[in-house]
Length: 208
Image (cartoon, rainbow, N blue to C red; front, side):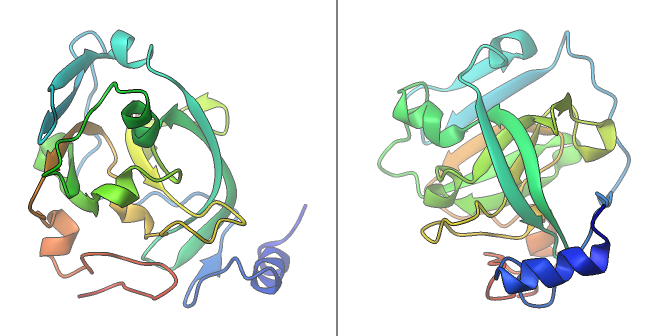
């Protein structure tokens, strides 16, 4: 088994460890507030705002949407990085490509709305990129409650892809319940608290 220090040395040599980050072999749990209780019988996911047709899916309906698997490196603003993580869920970009969601020309940003009125923001092009996913599974298993069960946004680095923006992990909301497409940017919980609005990993955009 590779030690944390050996892993960190390897990731540095492969240019996969962003500045200011340290490798971890664990999966730290970080969030603000309590873990919500979820009833899948009443759970819904909503897409609204600057879209041609608003959508609301039940849990059963959401799980009928096209599935995507992603292997990514993820990077937390608290300075840990976890490598080759495997996720499964729904790609927003794929939903748009298949016409399941159609943003209006006015849409420039997507706001993720989660339990307890938590939110975070991303530009539209970042949300539609291959490295953003509405994840239901991690490492082949449904998400644990403390990692966002039943659904969370995730964003990370796909190894070898230089054409996609990589942001810190807080830009994917745990316990997500809705996506709002909008013409105007709306900074969310951590952005309002002083975190950088964009959060680019390679440029160390941690605070505004």
